[in-house]
Image 1 (cartoon, rainbow, N blue to C red):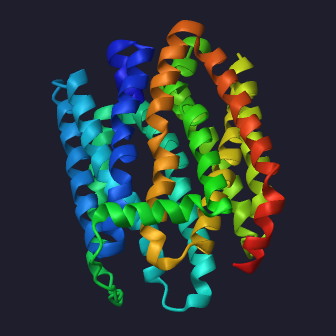
Image 2: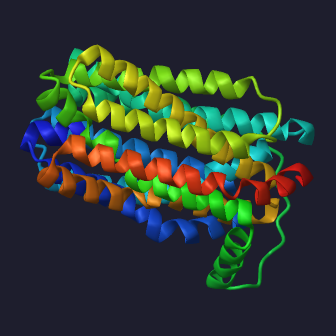
Image 3: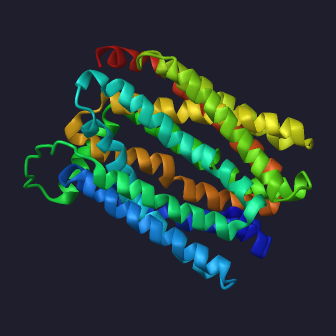
Length: 373
């Protein structure tokens, strides 16, 4: 979508605006979606959200392939997908525990889910960039829509033992307040959410600026964007392999700030590069740092959270992970139009490093609770 917007308008600000409209629903709706995920059948919620996501992708592909796509179409469909995702992420993230029959396997299942979730977010754009260069953005959107068919069939084929839920007599806002008190009254969860929010605000918006680096700074086209995002994907796979070698959540509190700092250093170095090969290597470094940081945060939270509050806590996770991103996208687009994309990434990288230092200073207070969990 970022390449489509930049191809149609050449506007850095609109890159940020569309990123904002697509992600702001998560910040507004996710807390209530978390309460619903704790109350209702999570599998059914996921089936509905995946079907709606398929319709969104199909509509986008038709508009592009028929040559009728307009910016207001992109913004509207982006908002629609943002609303769907606000319900999908808490339900899907908390559903993983219900899929595991042997509770001894929960730790490994959480790690695998975290790897798949974050790999998809990092590797997906890499594949998308290559497909845009090969077949065009319209076909890329169509392939995305078709891919949902397999997902929906797999969801209908699942046979999961229904989870017994105690009917709640509390109002939604009361359960929401209870979940917030639990998450932010738990130092470890609170610090993870704050670091995730910071990284998503100042670091993750690098993705919306990638078309600028590919086209204007490195002098390439969609194939350049594809290779750069493929570099991110390769780094992410390296990070996933590293995490797969670990057997428990112990020690992740030390890995999280290191990975965050690596991501920040990668962003700063990439912003200073003007050579394609070095930019490609630095994108791999960013992908490694981002994967390890996100997956470690996800695994650590899922390992220690109480199951009856899992949906609500994961809604706050999605708020931190995705809810702050729209403001980051809007901010990055505005800053890039004034001080340039490279300077924008430098500022973001410095902020990521400072956040990593702040998190590391609190790790001694968090380690005891991890060991107990």
